[in-house]
Amino acid sequence: MSPSCRLSGLALVCAFVFSHGAHAAPSPSSAVFRLPDHYEFAATLDARFTPDAAGRIPVRLDFDYPAAGDATTASWRLQVLAPDGSVVRSWIGDALLRDGRGSHRLVWDGRAADGRALAPGFYTLRLRSVPGLRQESERQSTLGERVALSFRMAADEQVEQRYDVRIGNVPAPTMPAFAG
Image (cartoon, rainbow, N blue to C red; front, side, top):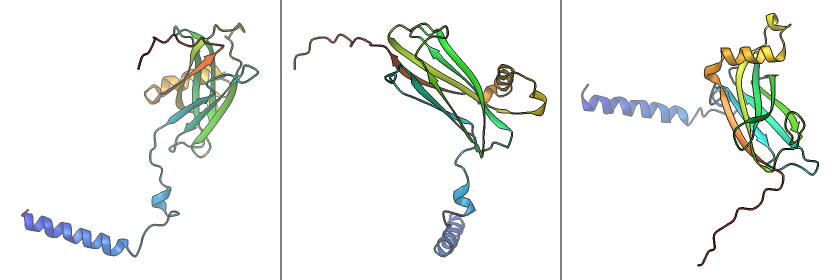
């Protein structure tokens, strides 16, 4: 194709777009604006950095999956990691997604799984989540079995989020002397 033909074709396309675009601009309620910007599974972790006056840390998990169907769930594992990386507390769950969205809230008391107080320091909340399906055949399965199955079936769609929190009174770091 010669350069003049390519330019003529480009000019024709531009003329069509500009002449029709001015008369038929899509409205925000049109189908163009209702399409999601992605179809991937997403999970978000939100928590307080420091406990409230009662020593609690509220945690919110949000899930978004525009491609979700009526039986789609978000299966999740939330762990508290000590400064050395060991797991000191954990929870599991699955949230049914309605119109592609779901959430779960919990409150962590700032303690280890056995109820003991944790040493002052910085701990990490780690959320791992995958999409799953709530099936009639799993009606008798335990929550742990359903979550484990979802993680096996959707391992390549796993999302991980981390958030650091402070437990107790952590001494301020020692700073070297500074001379301006």
